[in-house]
Every structure is written in structure tokens, then in C-alpha cells.
Image (cartoon, rainbow, N blue to C red; front, side, top):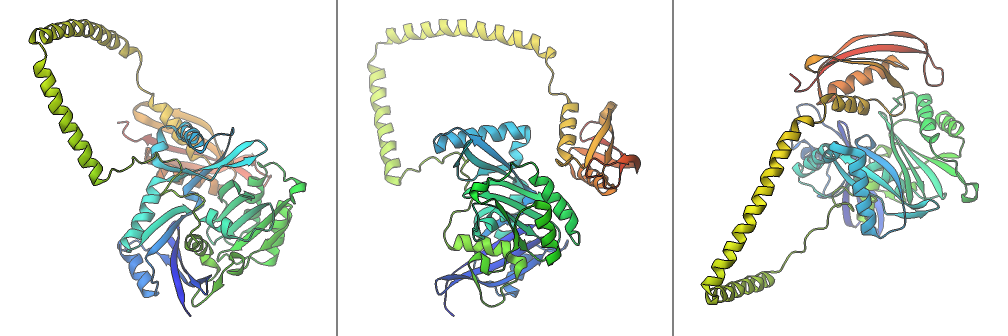
Length: 466
């Protein structure tokens, strides 16, 4: 077996990295080996390096894939414009949507495509901290990251196209990721928040809830089809039938590695490494990533570098101009120079008086305009912590002196209330987070009528409010 080129795919998620090495065997991509790296709490920075060496991974070039829970994707519709104008409009939209927290994210977008409503693109934001951590782990292992992209987008792109509009669902033991694609246009990227291990009903309900916000598919385009990747979950026929029924569309289970257009050779790693294999195969084929946070379309253009000879030429021209200017200044009449300086001094006196008056007015008005009240930041942070799907909601917020806050609310289940508690504890903006109670609140939940609401109360303090 002759392998001409190889590439490594790293599908990074919370606490684990799926690794797949793909190579060209007889000019056809094939999965050479794969595995799952789980980092323990005591693992050193070179733990991944030892794992790759122990499992005989040989290449150092890699593509990093981020789980969908670390990114936020929003479809944007824009009027027809040039690529530079679209990039500028999306940069402004990102700053408007994310506000003061925009610096915590890295932004990129999919290639613009024409739609009946205008030019469509998917604006994608990745956590800068998660991206830096993933790239740092790869570099510590001696790898060279070539690109960083959402794993689910790479898998959807690599999956053989069967319809104009389709959904690609990748089901893992801990979570599931859903991508909606209409031809070359990506419309949706979402991590399904329902716990799916052993609970296909929750998975189907969550997928149906997400799909309910999208317009119906056009029958003239062949409708929609659901393509399912089982990445170690263990889906059976009954689970596939349940998804087909809940989403009301044709569904089929994809085969690894055939539906990636690849072959398997050696220890291929199995379906659980399907996202890592898709990442590596795209880079091996020299296809640009759909979204690449390391080479963003929205990044400002880099200034062109000057050659060494150009720098010497500029330095010589500057020196010549300086010499000529010196001769000219020495030739000028000293009386003319004195007159010009006196006129300039008179102008500076007038400007100084105007500036002094402006400073006085600003000092007088400043006490009337304070900074942004801290309680607005508190409300904003709490709003971002509540899930979009409405499984939990606040009923009362009490703010006391010294940044103390009492939050009361309701959830459709105890697990949803605990999720709010965990998110508050994980936030850097709040400290001393304590659960006061979680109890039966009476009444049915806001969802589909499954069970009763629970009431909860949580106390916490704003960080740095003391």
C-alpha cells in the first residue's frame, strides 16, 4: 500500500478529541487510523503528543474542528454587493449583535450565495478562548494547524449530496449537532441541548423544536431529507423511524466511510471518528474550509510587505528629501521665518482659548452623565444565560446594595433549573452563587405538557461590586 499524502483531523469537544488520519491510497482518500483522546485532569501539555505517538499517527499537519456548542451561527440576508462590502456589513452586524462581548469571539462567514430573499450567508462566531485552547493543545503536540472550523459543517460538506435541501444530524453519546444545507447555502448550525444518551425521544423533540422555526421546504426542490450519522451513540431502526416521524421527512442512516466517498485501511477508528475524518479529507483534497477561524473572510486585510530593495529605495529617497529640505530652509530669509512663527503663535493662542473653554464645559457636564449602570450589565448577563428554547424563565429579579441579587423563576424540569444554576456558577460576572430552593411550582410546563413546572430561587453577587 502506497500512501502519497496524509492529513490529520482533530474534532475537539469538551474533555475529548476525536482523531483521524486520512491519506491518499491509489489517489483515493482512505481512513488510515483513528482514535479518541480523553484528557484527564492531571494530563500534561504533551499528553496528546504521547497519544499520537503511541497510536502510530505519523503526520504533523492537522485541521481543528470545534463542537457546535462553542460556536454561534446566524443566517444573514443582505442586498447584492461586492465581497468587500458584504464583509464590512457582516463585521458591523457582528459588533451590533454581540456588543461589548464581541472581543471574546472570532468571526467568519460562509461564502455568500444567492437566494430569493437576497444574498445569504451564515455568520459564525467561535469562542476565542476555546479556539486558542484547541490550537494550543495541537501546537503543544507538535502539530501545525492549517485551519479551524466547526466539525459539523465539515461533516455536512463531506456527506454525499442526495437532495437540494437536507439536514445532516451527527449523534454522539453526549450531544447531537444539526446542520441544514440548501445546495451551497448553509442555513442552520445548532448543538441540540437535550441530553441524548439513551433518550431518542428527547433528541427527536429537540430536533423538531428547532425545525419548527424554519419555513417549509419547497416541493419543487425535492423537499428535505434527514441524513443521520451515528458517531458512537448506537442508533437502532426504531430511533431512526422516530426521527423520521417527528420531523415528517425522509431519513436514512449514513454509512462510514462509504458516504464520505472514502475507503478504510488499517485501524480506521470507526464511525465515532467520522467528523475528524471529514475534516482531514477536505484539507487533503485542498478544499478550503466552509468557515475558517484561522483565516477569516472578515479579518482586515494585511498590509503588503515591502521587499528589502524597496525599503532601501524608500530610505534613500527620504534621506535625499531631508537633505534638500535642509538646504531650502537655510536659504529662506530669517525675517520671513520669524513672521511665520509669530503668525502661528497667534493662531495657537486662539485655539488654546477655545480648547480651554471646551474642557471647562465638559467638566461641568460630566457629573450629569454617569457610566453604564451595573444593573444593566447584570440583566444582560442573566439574559444570555437563559436558553433560547424557553425551558426556563425568570419571574422575579431583586437587586440590593453591594451587588447582591435574588433571582426567582420557573423551569419545565429540575434539570433545566439546575442548568441555570450551573451557568450562573460558570459565569465570570457572578460570585457566591447559591441555590435557595428548587421545588414543585404547580401547573403544567410551557413545553408540550410533559410534567409540571418547578420553581427555583438563586442568590448571587456581581463580581467586583464590593
